[in-house]
Amino acid sequence: MAEIQENLESPAGKAQWRWASFLASREEQVFLVLTLAIGALVGATVVAFILLTQHFAAQIYAAHGGSPWRRLLIPVVSSLAMGYLLYRFFPDARGSGVPQTKAALYARDGHISLKTVFGKFFCTSATLASGIPLGREGPSVQVGAGLASFLGRKLGLRQEKIKALIPVGAAAAVAAAFNTPLAAVLFALEEVVGDLHAPVLGSVVLASATSWAMLRILLGNDPLFKVPEYQLVHPLELLAYATLGVAGGLVSAAFSHLLLWLRKRFLQFPRKTCWFQPVAGGLVVGAMGWFVPQILGVGYLHVGEALNGGLALRFMLLLLVLKFFAVVVSYSSGNAGGIFGPSLFLGAMLGGVVGTGAHMILPAYVGKPGAYALVGMGTAFAGIVRAPMTSVVMIFEITRDYAVIVPLMISNLLSFFIAARLQRKPIYDELARQDGIHLPGEEQPTSAGQIKVAAILRPATESFAPELSVREALEILLRQNYRTGLVVTSFGVEGVVNVEMLRSAQEKNPASKLMDMLPAGEFAHLHLDHTIAQALDRMGASRMDMLPVVSRANIKKLEGIVTLRDVLERFGVSPKS
Image (cartoon, rainbow, N blue to C red; front, side):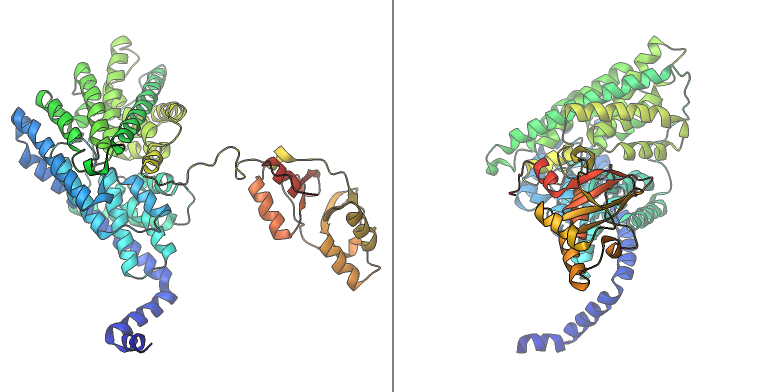
């Protein structure tokens, strides 16, 4: 006690106590200011990430990739060195960063260490600069969320507020990485939080806008890709975009299946081999880079060429196949980097192939292949990452052209549907599951949050007239072993009563009738489109084990009843009588 008292009386202790008192009364204001600070800090950090990666890549590789030996050795040596650092010092910095960010939000109370942030920044920068064809956007998400988490903890925010900062930092990172502030908001809510109506929406928007403003200040307002204006040549062309959607869904599902399968095989090796496993990716990339230098790095330069129709059909097909396997092996073996950027590359090449083929077959009805490369980017992103709304808005922000929206929506929808049918679980959730982390996914069709009360509805067989005395109603309920009853007139339902209410009313006035105890306002009720979970909530709040199901157009129109027994039996639990 004396030591605690001494600490409180010290200058540092007094300052800490004053800050805690201020924070207790001004936490929302502090959170708002912190949101803006996080947006600016994360924006500057991502800009540094971009510039550092590009600078080192330019230094490592001369024009056209340098000599073949350089293209072979550098990915191998880098993956071996980074593999050791990731194993020895930064184990949480392996992989993409998005699954780790979601794990921090849902399984680790919003905690991402500053050590992990540094390791992610450094190891990913070195990995990408060496030519490993992974993306910087996923790692940027973890770096942004980690900075937000660190600042929240240092300021002494409550755990709930620290967790709320995770999507704030993630949105700021995507806004700066892609120059797409609106898509960044949707990504943080759609993918990281999993709820487009999350209460943190306002803070996510502020952080995204601030990060985007920082990007403009430091790098200007140039879009990630410069693309020409596209237009739909003929309505028949929508069939070609639909074909692209089908192809995108198949490629996305194949990519997810192969990556998850191969990563699972790597994880089955002894843990002591983790430090040199990434060299498998380095060897594959180096061998491919010996013959095709364009396979090195994430390849946004070649994406830009595809968007402007500057790549031949065979070359795009070659890059699609080589990049597909290079990314799968590089990521599965444990290199630091994401699949966010590679999915855009694969989509651009696939779209260019489909667009070029369609233009060769129907030149009068099909537009430029560049338009298909652009739509393909969103198509692959929707199929692999499973964020269809984000992909549509992202491509729209990149092009700033509304003409591409309808083809994009058609292609994205087909890709998302096919990929989801062939690969049931989203790739980020499955990656986390392989690491032993079970993220909250979509509710199963049999869950209480999905089943409607219409599935367990039964007709009301017993009801009371308002003129019935409280004593008689109580006797009927006890005799039939019920706890709850309906009060019904010729106009419909008037209210709901239970045994406790009747006993209390009888004690106050033994001669009272049911009409005397009915509340003046609305009674507890359900509608046909309510879920079983909502039914349980309302039963608990009203202390009723049976509720009437009424029409939304007329609250007195009885559709049936739902009882607690029905709910339990729906899940195979038969309560004892």
